[in-house]
Length: 80
Image 1 (spheres, rainbow, N blue to C red):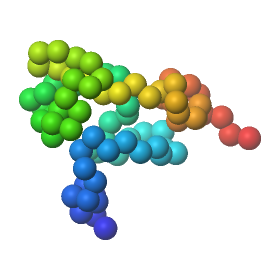
Image 2: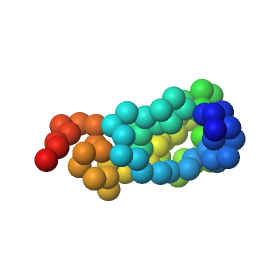
Image 3: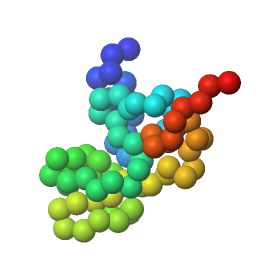
Image 4: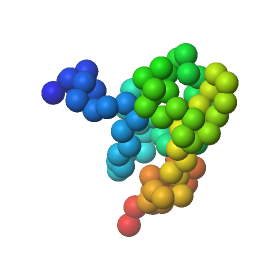
C-alpha cells in the first residue's frame, strides 16, 4: 500500500502512537505547536481551536507527557 493510499483511509486529526523517533511526511508530532490554518486546512477542519490557538493559527494537542520516554524527541533514546 502506498503512502497516498494509506492517507486516503486515515482521517485528518487521527492520533496514533508509533515507536518511531521521526514522523513520516504528512504526519506531525502532537507537541502542542501552533499551525497555520491556511497551510493546514484539513487538519484545521478536524481540530479547530480544540487545543488552543486564535486568529490564523490553531494548536495541536500536546501529548508528550503521555508518550513512552523513548518516543519523546527531546530525550535521548536508550537501548538495553
